[in-house]
Image (cartoon, rainbow, N blue to C red; front, top):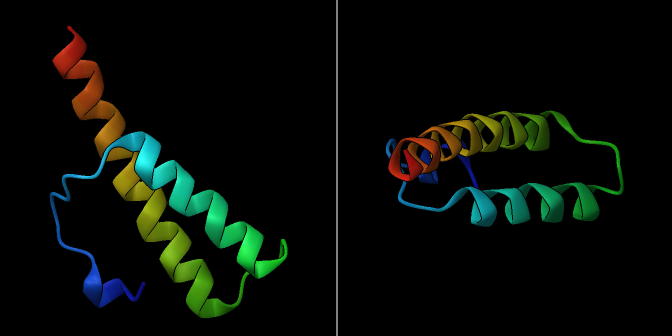
Amino acid sequence: MSPDSMSPGSARSADDVNERIRALWTRAGGSLSAQERAEYELLVVEWAAAMRCEVIEAA
């Protein structure tokens, strides 16, 4: 996934994004390239936003 392919306000769940993060680390073998690091950072931001939405919905 390139940074350009991510849309702000993604509707993916925190679990889905977490799985993508895990898959990225698995593919990378534990050491991220610069491009993978950028993807990871975007995924972490997306995961945090999804977590906030899920907490708000649960309240």
